[in-house]
Image (cartoon, rainbow, N blue to C red; front, side):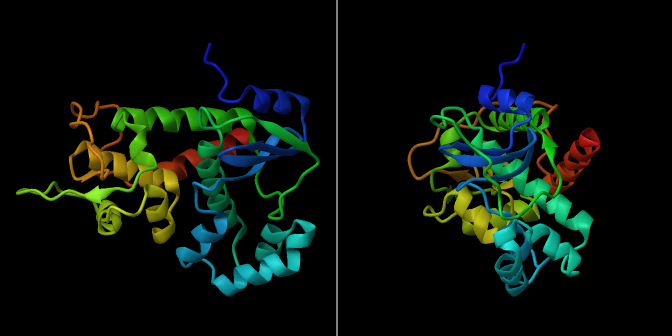
Length: 253
C-alpha cells in the first residue's frame, strides 16, 4: 500500500473538515474534506497566472479583490461580472491548486497544523477530492525524479551552459533558457513567465538532463536517456495538464 503524502490530510478528508491545512511550504484550504484552494511561496498564484498570461487585466483582478475579497467571493465576482468565463476560471484555478499543492505536500515540509473554519478569499470554485490531490502530487514527484534525479536543481539558481553544439529545445524551453542567468531560480523564472512552477521544473530538469543548464555549483553528469514512458521533450506540459485537469473534474462529479 502506498504511504499517504499527508496523513493529516487523509484524516481531515475522512472527517469532512473545513479549514486551512498549514505546512512550511504552503497551505491547503478544505471545505467539507475537499481541497478548494492551495497556496505556496514556491508557486505563482492564480492572480499571476491570470494576469501575466493576458487572460485578465491586472486592474480587473485588483477590483475583484477589493470588492469581493472580504466576503470570500473573488472567483464568483470575476464570473458574474463577465471578466472571465466559468470554465476558464475553473481550469486556471485547478492549475494553480495542483501547482501549489505539489509544493505544500513536499516531503520534509515541517510540522502540519490545521486551522478549523479558516476560509480563503477566493471562494469555492471547483472542489477536488483530497485523494486526487495526493495522487497528482505523488505522480508529479515521480515524473521529476525520472527526468533528472537531483532535486537541488529545483531551488538553486540555474545558468545556461554553452557548448560547441547546442541541444535543440522547444519554444517553451527557449523562454526558460533566456532567463537562466545564474541568479534566477526555477521559481523566479516561473513568475517572470507567468507559468505554473511545476511546468518550469519539468523544463529545467529536462534541460539539465540534456546538459543545457546547470546550477552554479557543480552538477553531476547527465544520467542515461529518459525512459520511454516519460513524456517526450517536445510535449507541451500545458496540454498534458489540461487532460489531467479534465480527469480531476470528472472524478469530482
